[in-house]
Length: 247
Image (cartoon, rainbow, N blue to C red; front, side, top):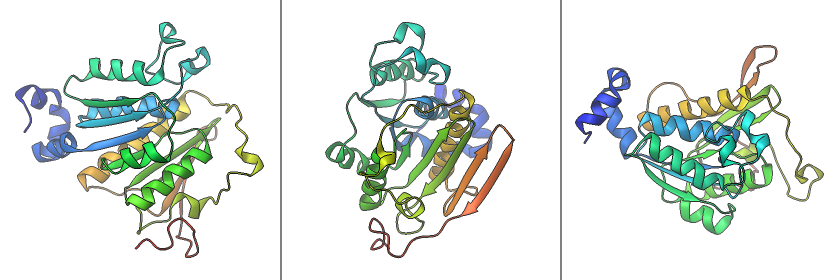
């Protein structure tokens, strides 16, 4: 049940979603892996939308070079744990929000424990090795995964529904011993993760509410420099080692 305060707070949304829709958001739980450029946007908008429970994972610390795009952090936060700062600020933004914050590396043990206990997972990561681990866990536990990746003025978004859509490995096969596994500093304009993070939130909200058209079986590519938005159909690989047995 929504409290009178919540009904007032979400009035503009309730006019679109109805009380029932807002209650669905309140009853939902979302895991966000990574609280950087994408993750700070995703968690902020999910918290403000009225999601009931957010689980955050990031083992990083705030750096000055983060501040062109990671909107939850300020100069006074440099050197502090991203997870602790993000959770403090999100609690201040929405006192009704249930928050679980993990200032530790995302690995298989932690991932399986957290993924099985949420409704939807958001990939807000900046490396493909961890992203593929997250994809594998979501496929195994059959949890929807909303993916985004950014670099420069460019980004991509897709929604993975295990057993129904391609998984990330279908779309982009990856082996951890490849040269591209070497971590590099990604150049990025601050608005790129801002826009892509908001699109991830839109996918999450539509999945929870069961409305609209999502990026299931599709990949949206965005070129902000030339203002191009292109949607491509993506198909399951029947020989995918990650999801071929999932129906």
